[in-house]
Length: 120
Image 1: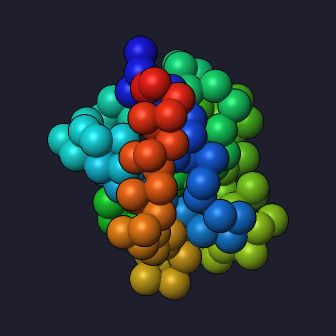
Image 2: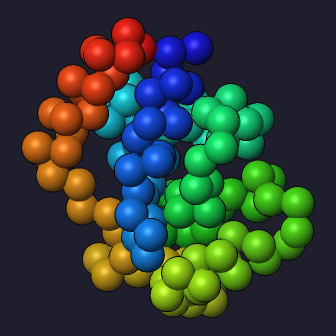
């Protein structure tokens, strides 16, 4: 369960107008091979109230449809934050070079300290 508590903290750090990948959050939580577990946690609400609409897959594809009750809600929320969503053969895609959260090593270290202080 500590993984999902870490997820809540890490996802809460994604700035408005940016997106993060499932793998990026898994890495920040200390489990670099657990990207699918991040998706599962978001879908089941195990991380609590987090900005799940800011999560995309490694190619920038909006893949969180199962987490949203209304079709197109993720796209709408991202566009409301100024993130352009393109329609491609892969589906609805965000340009990760432009909108991807580029967290720094310092932010990762700060998260690790916060996890330790929270005992998670």
